[in-house]
Image 1 (cartoon, rainbow, N blue to C red):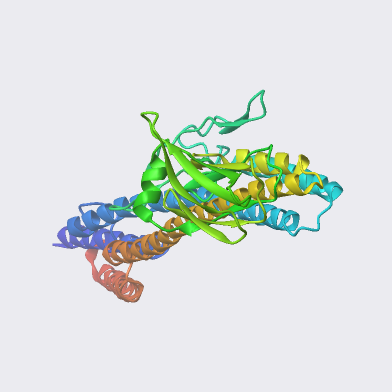
Image 2: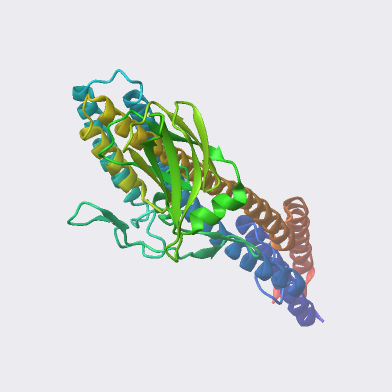
Length: 407
């Protein structure tokens, strides 16, 4: 009986000490379930939760990377819009009627500087080292100057999407479309004054009067020529003619060429200002694409070629008014592009917040499944310690009464 008692006591004590060690490990590590055998359901919950957290961490990293890249894009648009606004002010200054030839040259120099600034911004690289506006060709400088001074876009319009959550993706790149998508003039028609004009007439666009006709004109390839001549009474009149693809020329409008005269050509309303001379002419052509760099170069060229003669001043005003309309288009284009980027950035911020919230919730679930319940574990540890101490004391008492103590 004594041997059986000691054997049972030893086994019981070993089990209690093992339980004590387990409780102490739970307290020190903060983890109550470390193997499937301890609690299969809790262990599985933790594994699934850890996988979810890992995925959310990956999504958060993707969101951060995209936010950094698109944040650089938005900042670039801000700089571009600043340059456009600066050039608009320079053009308005040239149109005020009091700018001297020398000042025109100074304005041309400033526009050239703005063009170089714009080119530098368009070729900006992001924090990841790729060009911001290269599309999927991020390692290739997107805007390259050719031997003739023109700027060519070497990027593409490709898109790249990255997952930012389990059911959402976002574009990770921008293209150079905003820098090359503008149209000449007001976007429908572009007016060019003949360099041989001797009068002071200027043909100003006042907006689209007939949308359907304007759209057809812009998409077509049949320019309108506005020429000036003297009628039988010696007064200056205008005649607007258009030649069809078949070679048939027709008169689309005619009337007195007095300052303030309104004309509708190709669906666009125009106003004639100044005093055109017989023999003068304007060409109203469908607007065609021009890059922002080409636009700025045209403005600089116009300013450089200006002189103080009334006829040349009129040609300069004609060209600059057309360029001012084109600048307004680009201003709208860049503003829209930046707004679209801002919408994406806001979506990314919302997704990042959502991911963080989900990660916290999943982590709480994992903690609830496998983490140590400290109040309960401390109580169990105290109870087990007390039990072991009591068992040891009882064993000591029994041992003192046993025959083994005298053998």
